[in-house]
Image 1 (cartoon, one colour):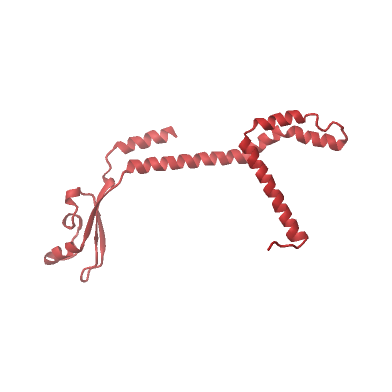
Image 2: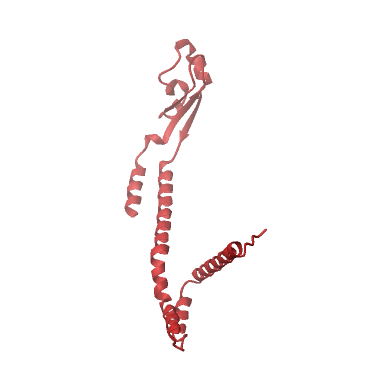
Length: 178
């Protein structure tokens, strides 16, 4: 990322002739269709006579043709555009990394954190009468996790239960909310 930033900043310091232009919009005139002309000229030379090349009308009609043209001097900052794109791509990359974390790494961490609770459930099925032997360790680990993550997981579980209830209502009981 720093390599991209440094190379783009070096490119930005060079004067770019594409950052300034004169744009002339000429409407249809007699048998000539409308045209848009762009040329890199200074602001003082931004007029029809300096920008429109080749002139589509013969000598006597040039002045009348140029009076109909609207010329504007335009300037843009390629440095700002490049920095904005770099910031945008950096944020996109961070979101992509976060998505990879959520899909690949978090399930592995959940298995490690809540692995004891699964062992407790399997021991309970076997007939062990101490089902909460490791519950204190599991609770301590879950409290150490971010509180926001717990809230999101709780909301997700609640949503899943609501969806299951709705499916039961619609498919089993044939009851539709009105």
